[in-house]
Image (cartoon, rainbow over all chains, first blue to last red; front, side, top):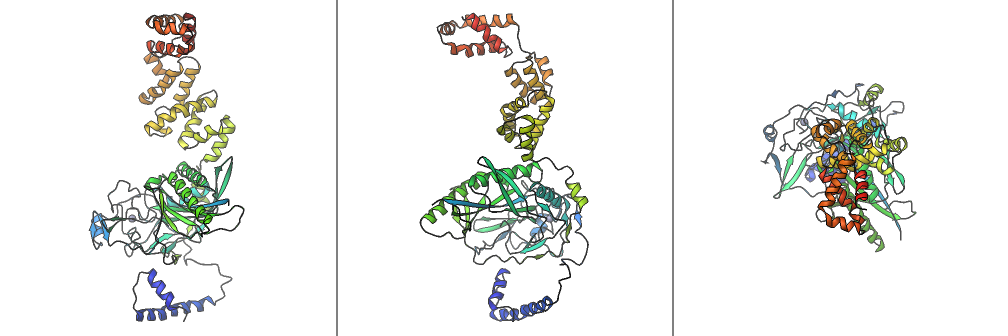
Length: 103
Length: 475
Ligand SMILES: [Zn+2]
């Protein structure tokens, strides 16, 4: 099996998933099977094939830089578990060292 | 022991496009209510697709060129995965191994010479939202989500807090010069983290570094780095080791606080963004972007010194801002005389007007041709120097040409000997005490006498002539 239990726990922690012991064992099997399959593909000799990120040759479509209205605040906040002062209200975070986008 | 300071800076630059990087929401939310510049794309609703804003690529290419980086013909976007409440999708669209540009450098002043600061990384990405703690709860505003950013990381090439400040000053100047970011640090348009370590002078290895976050001005960056250099020096002197902490600068107390250390090393699991195709920067597109690429401040500084024989000090200030330096050059062209004279008027008087009004030079009603006209009026003796200065203000307020104002308000200098002589005699008659004092040797009063005469004559008298007449009358 290509994945250790500790690695499964680490991945679960990154995904903020709280798994039971039975789930950890099950996902360890499933994730390992995926990795083993990819390992088979790795055996292919691809030395003569350029790396491919996309099967389309097309370039990214581009948008002109023109602002347009989007959602209203009420529409957005329909998805909020709780709201206050026009904002999502959530429990205090975390202190788990999760980096923010500004890093 | 003597130590060498090693500093690298990581900057985030908000590009000043009108709309966000992957959706058409407005970017400027400075005075907008929370969650009002948002849409399904930037708030991570299921089933939406990002579409790249072409101006973001264009502004990125401008920055790459200004930093001597190589803009790449093909680049990719990648997902950087992590969970945080300011990131509604659970990942940030960023770039990783195939960014828009690679390499590059910027030269900054260092002592008598310059230091070349290498660029390690330059890539495009989307900004995250804002979260703030209020009464034990967190509130989230997504307005900033999707605002275009360039992340730019320097090599550890800086050697002092002053050099770090100089780098940021030059970078901010450059960003505004090429018009890609307003680069206001207090508004978060230019953000900076500093990595700091020390090593014994002469060593070639690197010691563990600390990372300083949350510094919102160039002065704060300098202060925070200086504090950290002192702290690390004390630690080494005491025989202790430096640990790779993340430190947060507290502006109010001017101290560094250790942030909670990370329990797990970040594992961002980067992979190619499947919702976006590669960006192909064709030669034609690149040429179109760079068609009007301006002369950069550094080059212009050198040219001003060479072409106009300006001292380094003048050239430095005149090229601190593009509109000011364009203004200078236009005024020099309109004025046929010595460019240093134009520089003096700009540095002494026009800059003060700009500071007071908050305008840029390009916004002044006192256009460069009018400044040149005022200096010429003074040079040719039509008005005296102090009338010249009042003409600066009057032209700015009325928008009339200096010559029109001189004619309309009768400001032309009075050189007529008899008029000045009459006024001087009057001043002496009204102030016998001062006149007696002068005659007994208090010649320092001459300035005062000329001042009194100017008041009588509305500031229009020819000052050297007035002085000569007083000297004769008070002999
Ligand atoms: Zn949006």
